[in-house]
Length: 113
Length: 111
Image (cartoon, rainbow over all chains, first blue to last red; front, top):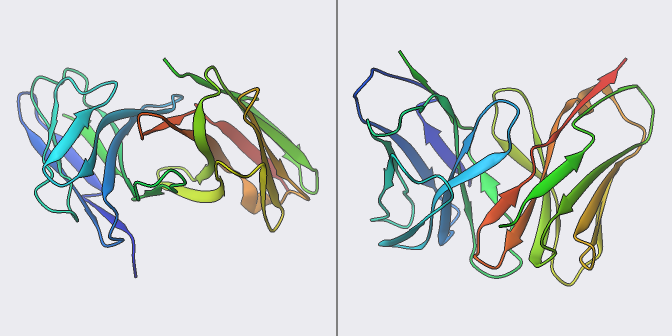
């Protein structure tokens, strides 16, 4: 089945640790996105990539890093510089034409312990 | 900066009612609009996509319309059912080729 797979579903981070969230898609989409969702708020864009080896910062990129070495994969690293990382993280992908439809993974819930 | 509002923030109705959820963009310059459903603790499921050349889309009991001149979209749910209970989010594709989301409307349909 085509889709987007995020792993793990739940992740716990100790203070000062870096953690990496995985996002893989087999939809052959060029564009991939990372969003953060906090309770009662909409989704906020962290990073997005429209092509392999290129990515752009979103509205809240500080404390996060990404890579896009393969079309299918767009991992997100939450660094120790991110002071409030506890949130629900969602990965999405789409084509890059103007009438795009976004598809989402099932999310990773990150908790700082 | 593009901002999106959704009204109402929450809605609780008895089963069978017809519902209207509203979405507004501060900047009407969006290419297309997508409505999503999100169940608690889950990802987003796409419901309807209104492409740039379209004004509305229908799928089953759902109908979404888009007025680009005013930057407003409406999601109409007919004959609501308890299984429709979820949070509904709208998102617009802006000229930067990324999606801007509203905060969502939390819907509860009571049996």
